[in-house]
Image (cartoon, rainbow, N blue to C red; front, side, top):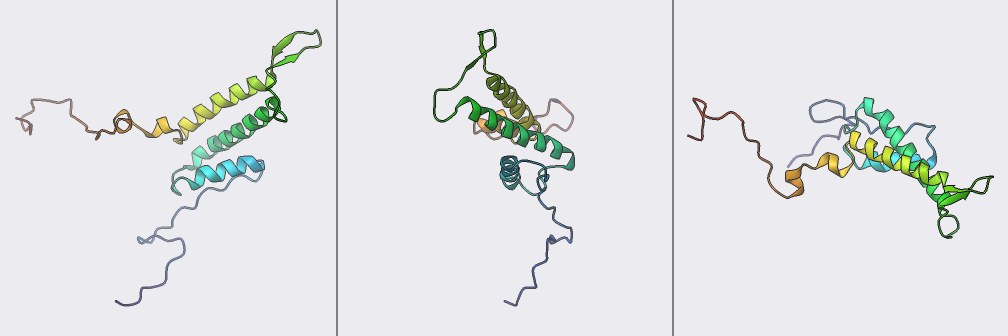
Length: 147
């Protein structure tokens, strides 16, 4: 067998350029950039459209904020701080728990929109292990194969 030619740089066999993976914005914090890279590297290079990148930024920031709030609730391995005292002496739910709850909801919504949540990729048939079949609602046609 003869020698093969040199491999092209970032070019497919059809002569079309292969899309690069999107890079995280420079302003994202370190942990948010790590989340961005983990998600982007787990998908095909052309998985995310340009219009979805702001949603991915929001998702990565929500993860960052959630983890920061979690660290405030669970400090130094002590029992979680579920309440905080007001100047009047009242015990109210921790603001960090509210932040965690808000970010958790945002992450769930954004992960579905970005198609990175499991429920956004799996149909009921695939989840049950069945082969997905599409049946036409049109029956009794002149050239129906089922007659």
